Image 1 (cartoon, rainbow, N blue to C red):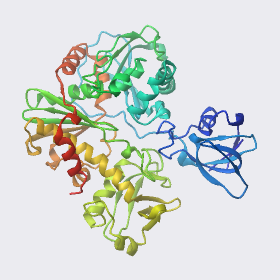
Image 2 (image 1 turned 135 degrees about the vertical axis):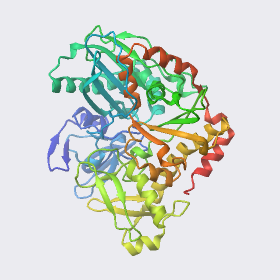
Image 3 (image 1 turned 180 degrees about the horizontal axis):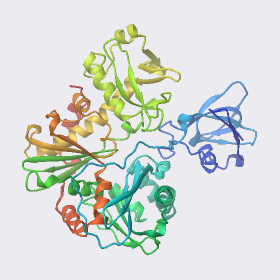
Image 4 (image 1 turned 30 degrees about the vertical axis):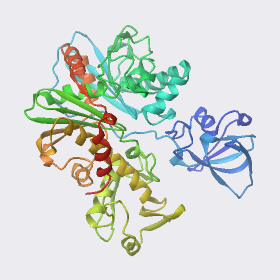
Length: 528
């Protein structure tokens, strides 16, 4: 089978007579696709152009004649003969680079380590994994790196991965190897090579992550987290030698993990509570860790309360026509006036090929300000027509063209997905606050954690009703607090018992048991 790439190169691979999907063939040939829906055929991100040959699409055999190409989902298609020709668009491929997610801004970390040598500290997120190599005795960061969690090939959310892992023990091991062999180890080795260090000099491995990712790291089934009452198999994870899961480190290096508080309040959130210093504040303080799931922790001056809401992967590009993750070619910032004169910033300073979450927030905020969007998220079509920005997509869907060659746009259908995501964040905090008799005006400090929160315009997030309307000076963007917690766990002997105490003291509120959440969510779908 001949594969044409957008850079005019071609690659020949064996078709195997329909034995594997095009997505599997391309992955085996070193060209992994964006399979964020876990090959269920629902996201449409892996679409390729079938130019000629016999293919099996779904359960139908289709002969494509030269000059009459068709578009098909690679995960639902197979080549039946070796003379098939396909064209692989760049946007269908899994992103190879990731906007840095290993930075954090937190209080000074104490140094009190028993480890003589280096520690690998790791944040395992659903979307990205970040690694820092630390001199445990001095607390000095030797190097850091991050990349996409390769489990993404089996779904872009924890529910998809729970379902995949639950199918068989082999699948559970596959997900473990995706995060360790295919993600963590290359990051560790890259840092070591750059620093001129042998990986066997790493004497300890410290990890923090959401509860599902930590289960998968240790090859513990997360199935119980996917069903009521969402209880994890374990909350305090076993210390093992690095050789057991196969981490690139000294074989005898202990692997330690920050404990989880519940099925959806994991070690990443526990780490955030510790390193943010939220418990030292007077009055009401909040920690928001914004990702595919938005975890919220409220400290009322005495006790910690938490909840998790499914913001969904819209801000990572899923379900958005031109949506993409924060990699080269993604529009990350956008401003414009009432004449719709767009000023955009593109990651990598290259041609725009899509739009990522931070720019989606900017677009909605700017559109609401200038009157392009009404409170329901519908466009002023006359304004779009006057500016020459109106696009009509299939099904009569209205869209605003942001840039051309290729077209990058946001449609009203996309806006609906963005409003659902922002509503989940806002309603989660509103509901949690309400259960404790608090109002937004009572909040004295709000910490924003996570890689995505690091890049958003906070003022715009407030404008669209994603974040509460409190004074901007009350917001503190602290970055990857999960990684910071993993670092702290590696360099401070006293950190582990403190974080264990935090994990046991957080009172988790399951939002779907609180009737007000549904009403708050529906109200928050409107734009202010």
